[in-house]
Image (tube, rainbow, N blue to C red; front, top):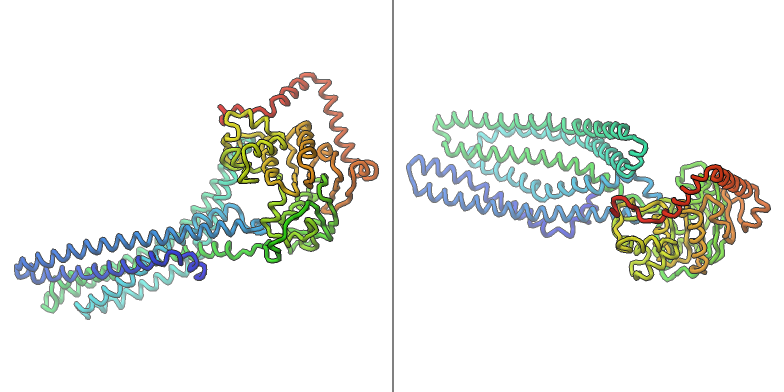
Length: 608
C-alpha cells in the first residue's frame, strides 16, 4: 500500500517537502510568541516599562504575521500536493479499469467503482494533505511547546504525565474500532449509489410502470442503512472527543490551580503562568489534532484498501503472448475445441466443445434460443473474454498472439445494448475512426441505412445526442452503432442482435448494402428472426452452449429440425398477423403510418 502511495506521491514530492518545511517554520515562529507575552507582563507591565512593551509587542506582531505567511504557504503547498496526488490516483484507477476484461469488470459493481473513484479517492487525498501538514505540525508543536513549558516550570510539566496516557488510551480505542465501522459505511455508500444509478438510468421504465413509490421505498431503505452506518461510525467521535476535551480542560484547570499557588508563594510569575497555560493549550491541541488526523487516516486506510483491490485485480486478458509485428490479414475465424465458462469455479461450461471454421468474407448467421450462448460465442473473437480451454483463431493465428489493440481494431462489434455517448452524431461515429471525414461518416450511415435520417436533422451530423442517445429511437441507435462499427473498416463485423429494433425492410436494406459495399468483410449476424439471416452463406444453430448445426440455409431447411421449427413458427406468426390485418383494415392504415414515419426525427424535447 505504501508503494502504491509513493508511486502517485512522487511527482509532487517538492510541494510536499515545501509544505513540511514551511509548517515547521510556522511552528518555530509561533512558539516564541508566549515568551514575549510573559516578558510584557512580568517586565513591561509589572515595572511600567513601556519600552519593553513596545519592543516585545512589535516583535509579537512581526512573528505573528510571519507565522501567518508561512502557514498560508504550507496550506498552499499541501493543497497542491494533495490535490495532485488525488488526481493521479483517480487517473490511475480509471486507466486500470480501462485495462479490465469483461471478467474483471464483473467482479465489481459499477456503483462500487464510482465510489472508489470519487469518495474513496477524496478520503485518501485529504489524508495525504493531513500527513504532510497536520501530522508534521502537531508533533513538532507538541515537542517544542513541551520543551518551552519545561523551561518555564519543570514541576507543572508533571501534570501531563497523567493527562497524556488518558488521551493515548482514547486514541487507541478510536483506532481499534474505527476501521470496521467506516468500511461498513463505505459499503452502504456503494449500495446507495447503485440504487440511485439504477433509478436514473431506468427512469423511463419507472414512470412507464408507475413504480415511483416502489423506487422511493427502495431509496429510503438504502438511505436509512447509510444513515445508520454513518451514525454508528460517528458514535466513536461523539464518545471520544468529549473525553479528550474533558482531559484537556481538566489539565488546564490543574495548571491554573497549582500555578496560582506558586504565584502566591512567589516561586512563579504571572506572565510565566500565562505563557505556561498557552504552551499547555498548544500541547493539548496538538494531541487533539493528532487524534483527528488518526481518525482521518483510519478512514483513509479503509478507502485505500478498497482502492488497492482495484489496482490488485489482475486483468486476465493481456498482451503477454502477443507478437508486435503480427497483423490481421483476413477475416477467417476458427474455433478449435473451445470450452468456456465465466467463472472457473462453475461446474458447467457456457460453451461446450465448439469447432467451427468460417472463411474470410463469408456472411454467417447465428440462431438459437435465449440462453444458448450466442453472444458468448462471438465475444471470444475480439477477446472480450478468453476461452477456458481450446483456441480461437483469426486469420490462422491464435487471437492471443495479436496485440489487443490490433485485434480489436480489426473486429467491428455492435453489442446487444446499443450505447451512444453525450456529444454530436459525428463525435459518436468517429469512435470508429477519429480521422474520418464527413463524407466517410455519411457513407457509413448509408451502409447502415441511417443516412436519410441524419440528413433530415436540422444540424445533420452535428446534432447533439443526449446521454445514452435517449433522444433517438431504438432502431436509430442500432443503425448509428452499426455505422460506427463500419467506420473501423474491420476484417470482421459482428452484429449481436443489432437489427432487432428495425423493420424487416430496413433490415433487408442493411444486408443488401453490406453485400454490395463491404465485399471481403466477414459478417456474423446474431438474430432472432430467420429473415435477418436467410441470405447468409451459412447459419450456425446453437442450443444449450453447443453448435448443433452449421450449414447453408437451404440444407438446414431440408435436414435440420430446429431450423425447420423456427422457420415454421415464424411463418405461422406472419400468417396470423396478416389475417388479423385483413380483419382489421384500420390496423393496416396505422401500420402504414407507423412505417412511414418510423425514421422521422423525434418531435419531442430534443428537436422542439
